[in-house]
Image (cartoon, rainbow, N blue to C red; front, top):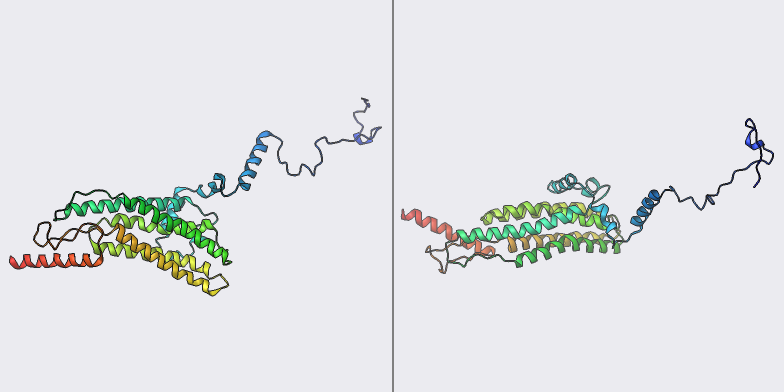
Length: 303
């Protein structure tokens, strides 16, 4: 190793050997992707690259869709109750849609359906004047609610998204499809609670209101996507969606909101005029109402 004497006032580039400085960090082109040299920086960058490159089967892939605050979720839920919410995807799901709200809405709806129907059945059983057996919870309703709500709120939008992708319509993502369907079912939660009221007119009215609001929300947000398809026949899918939604509303009414107070002509149980507590048809409900009116008229006449 040789040393060269250099005066303090002499510039380095003017030295006797023409001093040059060489980098021992390697080729700059090979290190173009390195941003930091510390272990902390490298670990952070590696973690980011792994999250970006992770497949849909990893937990990290879905983490951004559950990173949402309560205020945002509630705002998106309440906006589905407004009939003017015709651009829900662009207004409320932008820039990032979430999956937490749809899962929360559907899961809450399952428990609301089961609890409200069980409470309504117990109330009507207590108020009935016929001799019926002691009330017992029907746990089959819970499994029915789970299968029905998750199939309609999760499986159906995924199948619709796959069908539209096959038809060449790519205006929305599968997360947006699930979000629209999940948030659309929010209106059924308060309706389930209010349907505890033992009055068939009130229940049919509430079911009709929920069907109208949620159906209008789905149609106004899905039809513009169907309209972007080159084939005009694709728009007819909206009819299938309307039919399925009507079937869901009718199933909710008959399976969970069809408990009525027993009416007996003679005031005792076991008569031929009894209307059983439990799931009932519209004809049976109308017959019960007519018999109640006749009974009240007889009481007034006798007095």
